[in-house]
Image 1: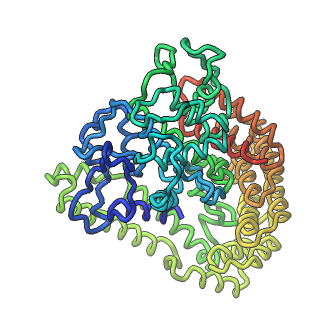
Image 2: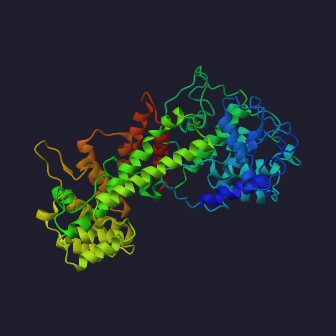
Image 3: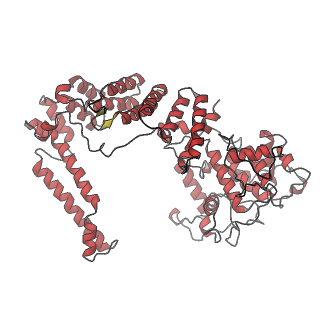
Length: 565
């Protein structure tokens, strides 16, 4: 869906099928797009045509908003970022930023995956469609001086929305019979009217301004936006409510409002958004062979040799990849006078890489009996099955892995045949993990997932040094793997239990705190989860180095929770 939205947006910008520019043609004419564009590959972002923002502090904000049609430059290809913005211009930008909140647009939460808050393009296609349809709107003028004014409908829409959210606020900010649309908007006016489009803040930042008393008429609105990080004060500790806002400052405000609206994306759509793993480089090195290391290195029978052939080939492949990635030949080629990036250089690199691949392929064929590559691995395993090969546990585990249909019967036979004296304890972990993966993805079965996770946990026994490890997995890493799998089948209380076990052994850090708070909420502990995450958000913000990405995820998580009744 997101890709379609982006494509629609780019198509609209390139081919001009949708007018994204401000309606005030007299004061803010659209920057003309590059001529002769015939394909998407020729697309030139409108912001790249603006000539006076390349060194401006607000370049990123301005550029993104221009490219998404919320702001635009002038016909002379300037943006004039330090010019004051008028009331009508500010409301036009605000309207284009928040129009997605219109009651005519389905308010159903979007799903988010991998924890990415895609706020600039949030529901971009729907915004474009709404703005296109809005051209046909004809509202009654809310002020006398807007009767024939270009922004009449925009001001009317904004006022109607504000009246529903906070009756009387719009008239309080803009009193009287006239709106004075070309008058520069003040900081307090902008703050007061922007409030109605922003969700409640997740915490108080306890910021006080020297020039704003506690009984100031807009103190609540200003505090609300400051706590939401929509606006800030000045470096000298003042807010200067009567000062006007520049076009650059308006771009920052619109960006922050967009981000707040995008918090409506469902953070809990996938466990990938809030669950955490601890990876290890050794994970890819370990192969569950279901036999002793000695037998693996020195297979006794022809059947054993056939069984281990692929594993040994895989090990050599990893050695080959390390050699290919080592780049040892780069200096040699440069010493020979070949310039990096040239066609001759690339040909020489390709030749050396082919030689390395051929070398390892030759080694596999000569040093590994019965090695024939990947193509007949499944057939070899089935042949061993017919020969009543002793390692039935390993045989059926790998039959399951190689059979694209992945029948669960293979895993069941592997578990039934498992002999811990001959197959060892280590690989039983991977057999149980295969069951967990099956019952979380192929055939959802919560009870089976819980059962096999408990079986996996029972394999961890402290050694003489007190270390609990199976194969290459420490128990602390296992706790997080278990929590993730349990979250997949919505066993949130069980998942929370494993996160708590992890925290009992390890120093807590923010990703795990976010995971615990999320699981608390999903397990039905909403109020406690919100307070837990709020406390830790404040602690995060007081660190010397603040991880802005993680901070955003905390706020996003809390706002998602607060929306739910």
